[in-house]
Length: 425
Image 1 (tube, rainbow, N blue to C red):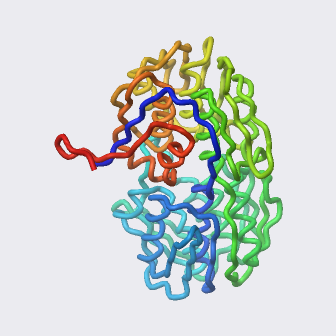
Image 2: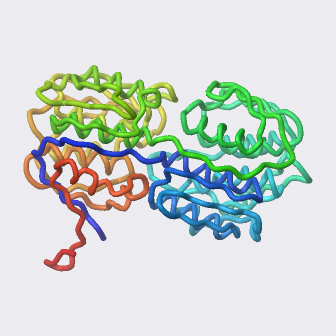
């Protein structure tokens, strides 16, 4: 199994390019099931999660090609309406095919999802939305079986905030008969991206970017060419890399409007974050990192997917920082690994971490528990004295395209390897 070795101490300097957002690409791939015509998506990175979603779509009968960061999907010959456990258990985003299959074919059988072990993340809100649109739901033997007699019917859906549930509801509602009103909808940029793509396909959606979405159902949708928004989580990871190594990075294709709350926190900690051309210039050169507090919230608040990376930065900040996690209940599994590297972190209950800054971190063997925790350990390794070996890096490949290559291009001493006895390849 591949590992990553990092030898810390190098200040990063140069340019890094951010690609399309994983959390935008995956629902966009699912929405291709809503039309017989070809969908073409640009700016699509090569990620394990995108490969998994490709396998789900191909299992259903869609034709998928991914070349030169252009993803083409044609779902004109769908032959199955089920997504099996072997695929959905790898990645919970596979569950997003439920809404499109119900919307277009009025039937679906989807395994209950898997993915990162960062909380229960139930799908009850997804199922509630489908039931509000007229679907009958039955759960048997670990599968959700859903069907409707003809087209779904528009209705009012009142959510507790849920990004995935909002996306699934949107994709089901666009082909439903009548009007659907989604109250307390998620407003993350990835939700907005999906809605804008659906509109280009011919959907009628108002209130995009707000907490209230109104969908007027249409009978058919067309295929379009669509460019995916940049990945704000990837951009944050590189911004923290600049700060934690006291380096300077120009992050091309990163946009402040997608990550204002993150940029505010990094600035408060002493980094310079400046909009420049088509990206962000981030500098931690000659700065003293300052402790701060963050609370994860739904957009436009601080994103839970950036919490672990910024915590790595807090480990070296002067003073005491706190992180309050309000989205997922098990998202502090990286804490003990950072402590192995010399961080001073104490948990208060399951939702709050108190981080007292230390003078330095020390390299150590560590174990990644999930996607963003993996990134946090790489970042800590970039700043640590000595060698850090990160195990279970398959998590990284789910959300970062060639992370170690990009970091190496700006001066990091980082390499991926696979041990065989005493040999490495």
